[in-house]
Length: 43
Image 1: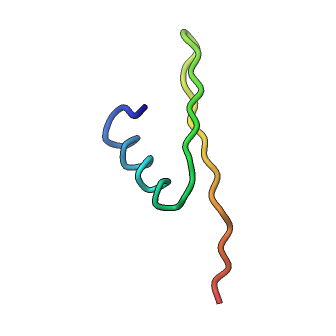
Image 2 (image 1 turned 180 degrees about the vertical axis):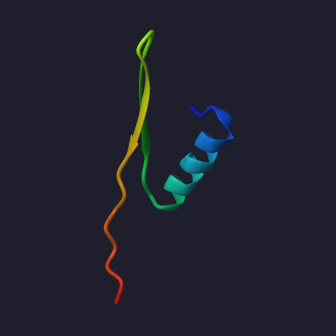
């Protein structure tokens, strides 16, 4: 589920990085978004 252009762009970037976005929403309290990125070694 995506809403707005910013979240759509974020979702696509995370897909390209092979990561997922998680959404937690509670009525009357708000919504939180979280994701993890992999650590990459650069030589």
